[in-house]
Image (tube, rainbow, N blue to C red):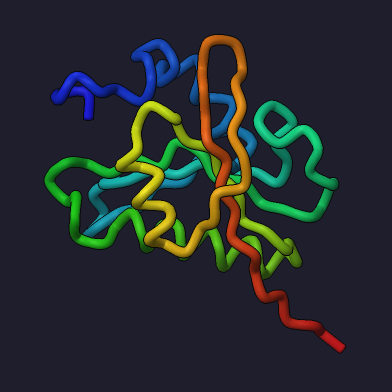
Length: 142
């Protein structure tokens, strides 16, 4: 997207200093093909910035889904979202939620195609975003 003049993030948002805390707390995950890192996703159990009203323990949230261009369109992104959904279900969460830039309607269509429903929109500072969620079926252990 950056090569098309539509970057999702600023380079400083992806610096080692910004990503290291997510590496340390275990929320940053890599997708690999034959050991080669080809994708990334951040899976969090709370998101007080974009979902401040969400009840604690109710949802899982994913951010920074990114795929190397050479594997774009192969289903890698969908596999990572499916992986996040499975982790959320295993943790007993009822929703998998995300936010994406309101300036990129293609992203909104992509998430809708994955079964996410538009929840709302908002802004944090100058950033305008859409919020999406997918209701998860959580199996009872009883």
